[in-house]
Image (cartoon, rainbow, N blue to C red; front, side, top):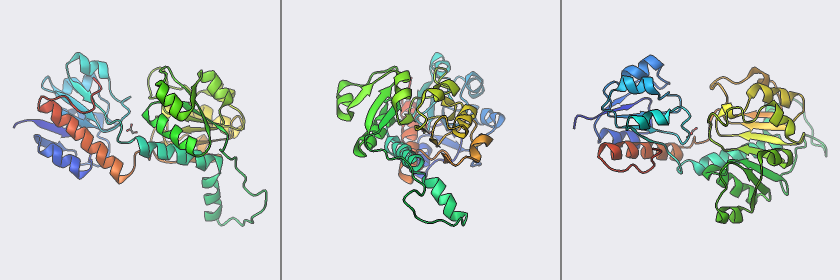
Length: 320
Ligand code: GLV
């Protein structure tokens, strides 16, 4: 066949099997992100490259790959690591993995909503630290979510799945975002479209689901945190840089908002030092799609995308 397929990091076996059937596969021997030099060396002569969220795909990588490159298949729904116009300009197809991680990621968003409002990680830490405790009517009170308002920033697939969970827990839903959802979606979720200002000033929990772009980098900064209610909680399961992490640490320390739950960070795997000592923030290490089933489905979808393009077919989930 003579087609070279480069996989920049180990992905689940069923996906590797599919790719191995599609050409001559090179799989990184390291289970870590490749350095930029290693990445550029690896992609030389590739017809297809299967990338992960830490691989930067830009003009330099495309030069390093060469003119035979036909497709870049990202094993993630988010693609802030990829310069899509650069690929399009060279006629290279680009695909991501929407859909298959929607429910798993919404589960984590909702888990963080419960963890932060009910102080679950704080309680767990207390017991593990051997701190003496006694039940009382006033011990470790959190805030209930029933009849409270969830503000969803970005009502895409994951935002909608999070809103469905919120409805089942008795919450009201409002949302903001440039794109208005279909009427049927708004009706099903009883979700009202509002401005970001209105969302921030009225929501009891704000959950971020917009993709990271030049427009959404530091969307939630000190000023926007200041618009939130002092009793409100912020949850981020999209990409770290949507929130100004230093400003969030200050806001949590100073009681500007009540709490936060974070699955993603500005400079992963680093976490802003100001967050680490705070009890009112839940910190988990980018686990949104981290189930066996979801990661397998993501890998298989990326592999199907890559092989489809190599075979001259339309990929299942194209971006360009
Ligand atoms: C993971 O973070 C993804 O974007 O799929």
